[in-house]
Length: 309
Image (cartoon, rainbow, N blue to C red; front, side, top):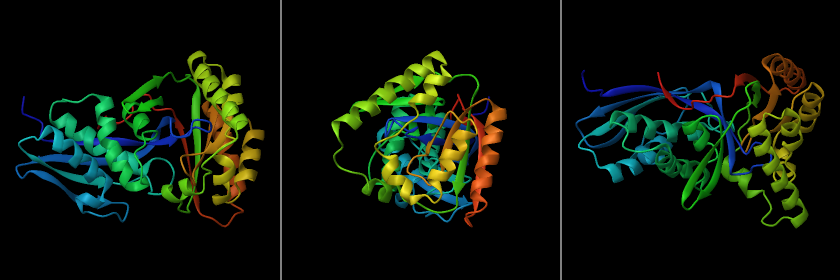
């Protein structure tokens, strides 16, 4: 069998925070994601040779895919280099893990071409180096579900520990992406440095009960847990029509509604595809009056994560 020297991969979009789990919880989407082609080259180092679908820098040190790949190569030091083509289907600044898909995609593909010397947790750590370029801090709440699939919880970052959580079988996500840009660094800057103890207690109770709901496929408990009293009140002001869309979508039967990552995308979790379709119609009816362009994705939870295609 000839040695593999080129690979094409699908790097899925992700939803981070999942309402109550700021910086620790995330889940993986199935119907939207980037594609990347990575090939070995005799010349050492990393070169980004093509980017389609978005105006992003080709310079390796200015691109999240390049930064994460270089961090990995510094450790592995293979006797070759890599060329990367990126086909962006996740718009940067959309709030569904665009930078995480690029950062994770390059390290996943290089690891595959080198015979998988690293495990998923190690790949997450290298991808975080690229993610830090986009958001000014290393966080794994998008990268972990992109690499592991399903729902993930970042137990800790020093040392890095990722917990894989089960996914209830009928769970679907409906995502609306208003075509406005919110930079992660700016969305972090508006958050308070201190919060009341009573709010913290309520929030970590929601995180605990959400994890239990995922383990027991308890959709009622899942719905009761998808509440964010710490981050959402500050960030929702950046997203037009957020309160209206949330209330109407919950009336339509969604289990819960929240900001995806730092926004502007808004996610709803639903019990079954029929309800996810109904929620999409509700989101459409709210936003078509806003004068803002938008698109809507309906997706089952992607349990595999990033994959070779």
